[in-house]
Length: 307
Image 1 (cartoon, rainbow, N blue to C red):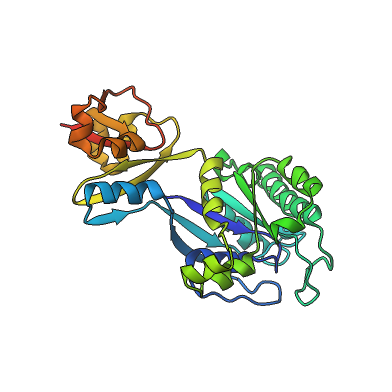
Image 2 (cartoon, rainbow, N blue to C red):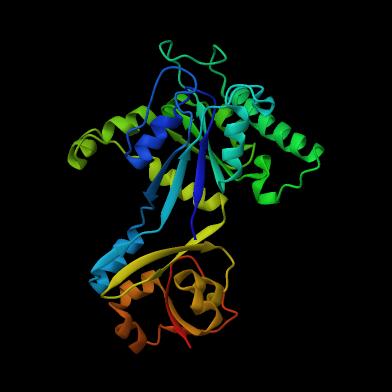
C-alpha cells in the first residue's frame, strides 16, 4: 500500500529544507513566503535494519524496502480558508495525503523572515489548525460531504519542531504533546548540511539524524506495521494497517493471493535470525501455520500458500 505524507506549516519554517533532507532532491529554498507554489513530491525508502538482516540471512539478490511519498505543500497563512496566500490550492493538496508532518519553527534567526514577525510555536500551530477546521466547516456548510479520511482536521499529525532539541523547554514540549499526535525535534539545516559529509565524518561530529524517527512516527500515527518476505531472489518489506488478517495482507503482495489464500507460514523475524534460516526454523518447530483469521503482527516473516 502507498503512504503519502504532506509537509505543512507556515512559510519559512523549514518545510522545503525537510523535504530536501528526506528526499535528497534539489528544491527552491528561499527566505521569502511561497517559495514553494506547486507541491514537490519525493519518494523516501523507509530505513529498517530488520530487512537488511533478513536479506543477509537469505543472501537475497534484491532488497526492496517499503516507501513513503513526501509532499512539500505551499506555506499556509492566516485566512487560507478564504483563499489568502495560496490557501485554497494548499488545502486541496492536504486532502490527498494520509498524514501531515507539521513543521513548526522554534528557532530564533533575525535573518530569516517570520510571517508573524515573531517566533511563537503554539500560536503558529493554532493558526494551521484553525485554518484546517474552518475549511472543513466551510465545505460542510456548502453541503458537500467529505469522507472522514479527507477531513483536514482529522488527519493524523506529527509535529516536527525545527530547532536544536536542547532549545525546547519541557513546558513547551508538554503543551505540544498535549495537542495529540507525535512530536519529533530536529535541526533541519543541520540535517541537510550533514548529508554532504561521509558517514565517518558525521560520526566524528557525533551527529545522529532524527529523520528515521520522523518516518517511524508517521507509521505510528497512521497505525501501520511492516511484515516481510525473504528468500534468495529478494527480501521485501510490506506496509499494512495494524489489525489486517493474513489474507488481506497477502493481497498486498499480489491481488490474487487474498481471494485464493489457503494458509500462511510465519515466524517473527528475530526467531528466523536466531534459527539461522527457514529450514532450520522449521526443523525446530518454530514456523507457525496460520489460517484466514490470523492477524498479522509487525515483524512477521510470511510465506503465503495460495490456490
